[in-house]
Structures are given as C-alpha cells and as structure tokens.
Length: 244
Image 1 (spheres, rainbow, N blue to C red):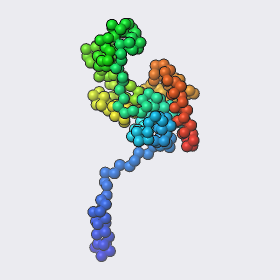
Image 2: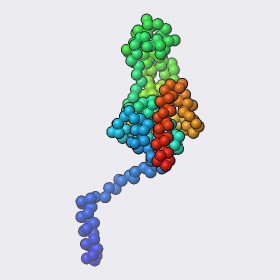
Image 3: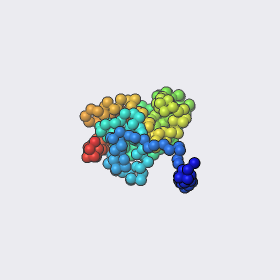
Image 4: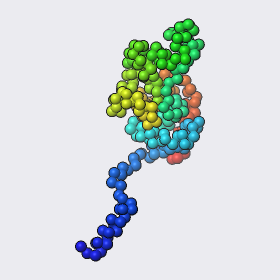
C-alpha cells in the first residue's frame, strides 16, 4: 500500500469517528408539486382558529394521506382540508360529544326519546347513551354489547360503527383494536378521513363545481355549508396564488 493510500485511509477513519456514516438513512418522501404545497401556511388559511404550532404536526400526515388516496389536484386538496377543518378544527384525538341534557336528547333523537322521562336515564351519561342510540346499527351489537360506546364517532370525520372501523382497520393492515388507537392520533385521524373520502367517491365529487355534494356525503345534509365553502374558497385561492 502506498504512503498516499495509507494517508487517505487514515483520514477516512478519522472522519468516520467524528461523523459516522448513517447507514439506515431513509430519504424524505418526494411528493408531487401540489401535495408538496400543503404546509402550515396553507393549513392556517383553511383553519385560522388554530395556531401555527398547533397545525405543524398535521402537515406531514395530510401530505401522506393525500398521496395515498389520490387527493392530488387543487379542488381535491382544498376540499379535503377545508372539510376536515370544518368538521374538527384540526383538534387531535377528537371524539363524539354525547354529554347531552335530557331536553337536548328529545330534540336530537325524538323517536328514541319522545319525552323528558324517557331521556332522563341517558342524560349526562355518554357511555349509556352511545350504547342505546348506536345499538344494532352499523354492524354494532345490541345495547348490552358495549359496541355503541366502543365504536362511537372518533377522528376528524367522526368515523362511527363497527363496520366502518373494521373496514378502515383492514385498509390500514391493522386489527380493529389497533385501528381504534391509531385513529386517535393525528396521523391515524387524517388517514381515517382520507380513507372515508376515498371509499365515498369524494375525489369525483370534489372535481365538480361547488361543495354541496361533498358536504352531503360527509354530513348527511348541508349543515355548516357556508363555513365549509368559505374555507374551501380561501384554500383554493391560496393554492392558485402559489401557481398551482
């Protein structure tokens, strides 16, 4: 071995001792240009009620979900983010609020609670209420099975029912119990909303004018339509301003 080669080997060894090569390096995911535009500033446009610090952890999960489910043009991205922002204000671990007064129960579920006396045993008792109103629906068992409470609405889109959770779990390669824990994380919550978006053909609906069709598919009606449209319009404008 030449003196020069010995010198080079010694220098390499010294460098590796100071800055060892990271052999398990995984490159950052490469997103299409439009999906890469999803950042904290864009989320603030869609969800101004949250701070930059609160929104930062949502950026990468939303990019991943958009990539996975083909949410990849201006209308789809704006629709997905704005609908999710309306539904949840991008608050992590969101769960359905079932803490109702007896009077409110008679208004929300009049067929189940026709009067105050019928509602009183379930008032301010979320677990008992969930087991009652979600029994024998959406793949759930009877009231005493506990499925209503176990599979109450959770995540940004309030995914509800054993059937939905089982299908979501299968799509993610998880058990149902793993999916129940996953959906309560930011990444899992976003992925559940994107999964729902995909299986309900919302990309196609988002490609058409307006947001009414998407709202009906998500909400079952047009509740909050004005707010959803305002968030959508702002998000579209922000993407177009960036040259989308």
